[in-house]
Image 1 (cartoon, rainbow, N blue to C red):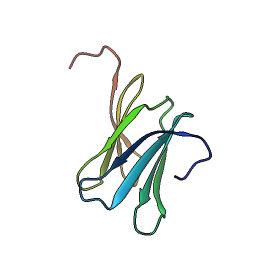
Image 2: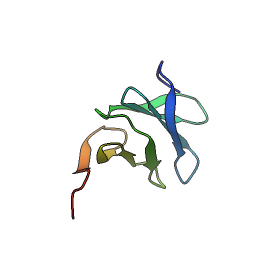
Image 3: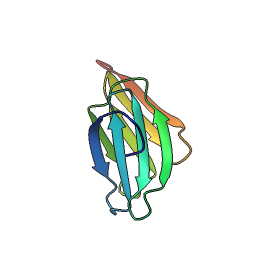
Image 4: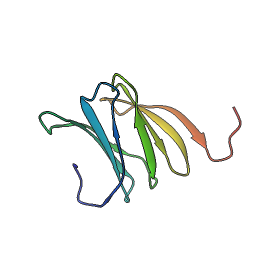
Length: 87
């Protein structure tokens, strides 16, 4: 899955081309399903029991001690909402 720790969460992009996985150490990896190549790697700074990929695979949302949304493959943090934040 792209890291040496146990996976906590898995998610496919809507088109089935990409697989996102999150480890118990706060790392998330997006891989190409067909080739197995790592497309992007993220340090989420939190355990990530839940994640989701956008349909086209351009965004990765991680949930742990808050919600974080990253751009794929650049890794840019595009949104962050801590636990209890009101929007």
